[in-house]
Image (cartoon, rainbow over all chains, first blue to last red; front, top):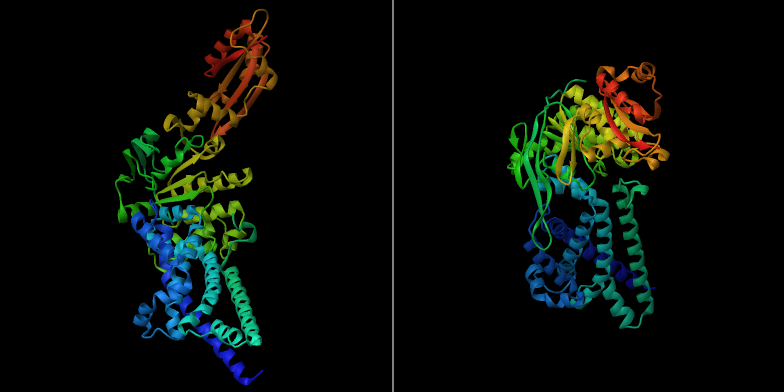
Length: 224
Length: 353
């Protein structure tokens, strides 16, 4: 295998990691508060705001129902506005983040809804404000679930990142399409897939390890 | 360890009602015209079956539920009318423990007890001192850095108690705190509550469906059914002279005086023809509760008394006995007169042929 090819693979791997890492980070920054809000704002809940909850829910669902490849193309003007360009690895972060935010928001919402409502009652009985309940009870208690959700999000974004080649986003998926498929270099395709498999395994293993570390519920108590 | 003495606060319910809206219009009365006053520093039990409304009643004391009519006051402050910061201030004066403990799985024992203090913005040095005191008070020094998942049910409830006391409340609410525990652990948790009541003087209001819990620690009891208080008074009076059928049925489980099956089966309300025996309940109360009255009756009246079931119990320091006996029906009135003359209560249950 040529040194050139190895270089390309390494660069593409780095680009993929860069895109996914930044978009996960931004997606978490955006998705966490939205997820918390979605989990706490139905009628009679901590931050009761049923109308806003409904609207936000519709927006989140709408964003999630647009196929990613179409989202990438559809928001090109927005991407140009934010990133200054609509082409390249950095520009690809914009659609990846737009896709990540609602996805992570739903995962966070689910994790928070898993928290025993008795804990909210206990915190209210102590005189906690809604914000204190969110910060000191809901998020810490949901952390194992949030961690697993973020792991899932990273793995999904690895998949999405293969599609941003459509706007010159480069990365592993793009390399696989251009060299492995269009130039009939099956060894490149094979290597790209192999690297992606290894990345996903790595992410999953690390994610589960962290989730176990933050999970103080004994195995016997899980799901109880 | 009497560093954190507080005084209890009075709780009063004045004509409290709670209506929940029903699907398709109308409403369900969960609580109906409840009036009850809880004296400062007492332990009062509210007993009722599930769905009777006792949980709703308890939650009105710290404003987790709001009355739809009437008024609930704690230390003279109207809980139902309080909102925002005012309500949170009341809540800091009212600790609460729960059937399922409601401890944070992500926090250690120490951190769980510290939570209410963090919430109230207590400086961390003071938090450390208070939490150390409380953890010691409930006997969990060796477990301070353990997580709830590593504790037994009784230990978890001790953490719950320590946490409820963290903000030096004047009232402690107990929501079926021992219902998820085995009998032995229940005893130790009840003893802990009684100790706290004695040492700190705070008012304890507890709800339960077990009369034994009331007998063991409560000085007062209210029986609630279908959203109404059907009977209330001192525990001793309620135990020795229950009036309402619900109260009696709660008591039959705990006083151990139910008729043996073979008697209950043949019991008739009216006296059958021919020779028969009258079955009666005698409740021994007061100073004579432990006197050998039956033996005396036997010798003085020359009566043959058949003992069917019985128990002598204590409520606080005062003993009382419950005995089911049968005597020859022809001479039953004589026996009842003798017993009532000696200040004991009797109740005719029926006749057996």
